[in-house]
Image (cartoon, rainbow, N blue to C red; front, side):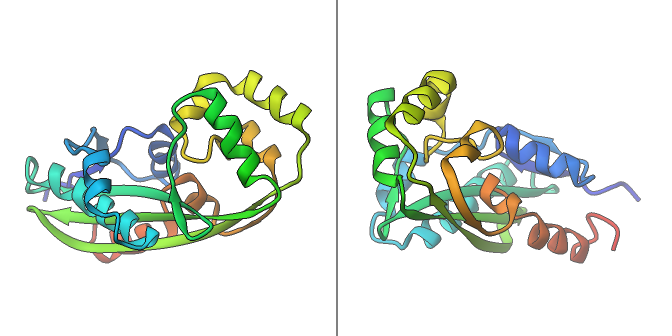
Length: 198
C-alpha cells in the first residue's frame, strides 16, 4: 500500500518548519487563490470565520489539482479591537501599526482545513492572545531598523519566532498557533485519517 500523499498548501517557511519538525512527510506549493479578493468577499464575517474560510479555499484549490492527496490549507487573521488588521504597505505604516498595538492585547486566529478530492474533510480554528509591552519609541525605531522590510510580510509587523518576541509582555496560547498552524489538532486529525501513525 502506498503512503498517502500530503500537501501543505502554503509557502510559509514557519508552517513548513512546524510540520517538518513534527515528523510529517509532505510536499508544499502555493495555493492558486487571490487572498485579497477572497477577503473582500468576506468583510461581513467574524475574524475567526475569515481565517477558516481562507484555509478552506486554499485547501480546496490545491485538492482539485491533486484529488488523491490530503491537502492542508492554513490561514491566520490578526484581530485588534474587534476588527481584522491587515499587513502594512511600508515601514512608516508598520511603525504606526505597532504604536497602535503597543501596550494592548490582540488575538491571532489560526485556522487549518484538510481537503481531499475537492471536499473539506476537517477544519478548525484556534486562537491565541498576545499583549504587547509598553516599549519605547527608541526601541521601536531600533526594532524596525533591524527587521527592515521583512516585517511587511507579517500582519502584525513582527515575527514571533525571532526578535519580534521582544515586543511582548504576555502571551496566552500555543506556540504553533501563534506561528500560524495549530499543530496538536492537526496532528490529531492526521492520526485519525491514518496519514501518520496513531
